[in-house]
Image (cartoon, rainbow over all chains, first blue to last red; front, side, top):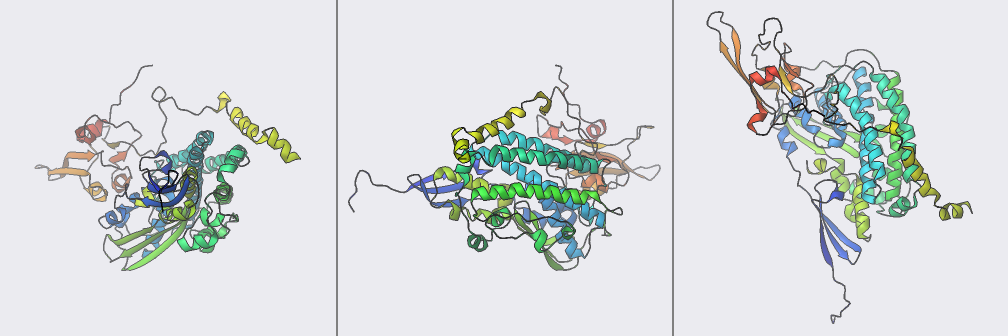
Length: 369
Length: 151
């Protein structure tokens, strides 16, 4: 074919790893035909710390603070997953009081994670205001964490077998005040964004991932629920006493970026609903099950998956009967959800790519581990 | 018809603007004026480590059992002990704590049987050198001395 002046050639564009909209150190190689994305390729590993290898050189108890540093936005959920996995191996179960406190803290964590996602996602699209508001509300959650366990982000709140810290005085009141104030704030975000024509135009029909695609890629969490699949591990295989609480799984049909936004907003409301039920009756009793101080789980393996804010978070732990784990494998939701980027971005405009990366809700600490 | 009205008169945009305006109320200012105003951290805050001394006789509470060093995931605590010739008791000689590697998980204070090692509410522990982040026994007992700014 003769080359003419107006021929189009494929342009390869590098995005990241120091791009503010890639939510960390993600590098995306984008193939462009004009403004259209014809393919993307993710380059990950810039934040790789070898957490799974670190586990093999620590004792079971000592590894617990490290899991907080994978998904640092939802550190409490990570801690819960690891503790449940080791408890399953050890055949121990946390006492009822500990389980209820765990549910409250993980649901608060879901709210904090979704708030951070909403703020940064809106910032990517071009709305700066929600970021300030979401950070303000997130502060409420972090203050509760700080008062409860002494740390705000990488909390190390749970221990294998239960909890280390007893509830502080006024915990219930703090949680209740937060819940009461928070629902009006969610309404405020919805007022700012849900009907805003710029927000709707930028998000509707962008990055469509159908239910079949979701299942093919193993995508979980709000992304699969936005595609219309009612899949939530809190309902499908309840852990830590989630079967006691009355809540709904919010779903949408289209599976585009706007639907994922709506699902996450609904999830925050449902989390408040769970917290309210849980905080009403916190049973009294011990907070720590009888587990030995020097933990040596019997030889065997266990897999436990929980519904983290970003999707299914699984821990596969193998014990050879010694002080240290033989292997710890993490099934991170962000890493697996990130695979679907290429399917969603293909055919969209390069400006929408930022919205699509934002809607996956990735944390690079978890993708690279 | 209503939709057309809303589209023409930018109702959705003004709705959002109204939210922003509502939040301009000075009542809602949440920014902390650090360092002019020091934040009051929670009682259980896990900050700078401290080696407690007995206030009555100024002797250290530490019995040199080495449990904190064993509990630490990063192996950053080094406890030095010596045998007292007269009483034949183990006494603490040196204690180093590398705060540059510490992740403030609190496992060492959980392990301490006599509440000698503690993570305190001090949070200003930056230093100009890497050596300055390694705390010896004296610094651990006295605590950090952060700069106080005058405003």
